[in-house]
Length: 325
Image (cartoon, rainbow, N blue to C red; front, side, top):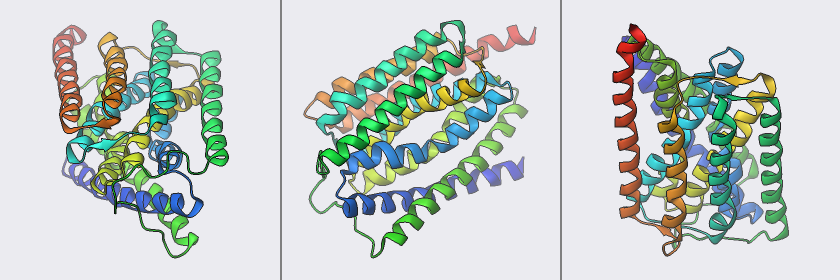
């Protein structure tokens, strides 16, 4: 128990170190390559911080722990939008670029609805996984193409004086990004292993472990990165990280996992699926208001997550005697 708690704390510390390195390195890359921080946030940062989810879900699916694999993705997406964006907005209201509203948010909402449709039989099979992967490849390719076509697209929707500093040499950028990603993966691994061990000792179901402990643990890189970015008023990286991560989670992680082995899992119910869809759907009207996510809207998002968590835990308490009997 003491060892698990120590590993839990160490995981938090390592995650925040990694987030600092990743934000600094990616911000410098954006300046050096004259690529919008929004594109960097939607790709390099978002995919990098989602690596823990990828590793955990693929491993869980391969091991036959489908509830953890799916719960990790669903729980992470709810956590990312409702809690991470909410906390980031409470720290500093974030300005939103129009590209997010035209492409990325609609794709996140559409992917969520598509997943609910595919998962109606509580499994994701090879063909559905292949469709997810192809859609993800098209989305990533479009982002890269747009960045090359118009390098200044959406450039620097940041407050004056809030631009990241360019490092003296590109080698430091590579070291900062790779080192940051490495620390994020390591910290997430420590945190998830210790948290799962503690949760199992308390007799919590596999689905709830995936939706809460594992999802929270693998989403801490996104939390750390977006909070650090918001603190430095780098709103494009903060928002792009969350939206890009959610798209990556649904299309790439579940797609790859289903290509390796059909992902099956019970215990992921309507509450969880619609909490994911509703939290994603709330982002669109919130972002549309003056192209900004303000503190009041951030508080609403945090409240949504708290309500969802209370309902989930209450549901678990109700079902525990049935499962035990």
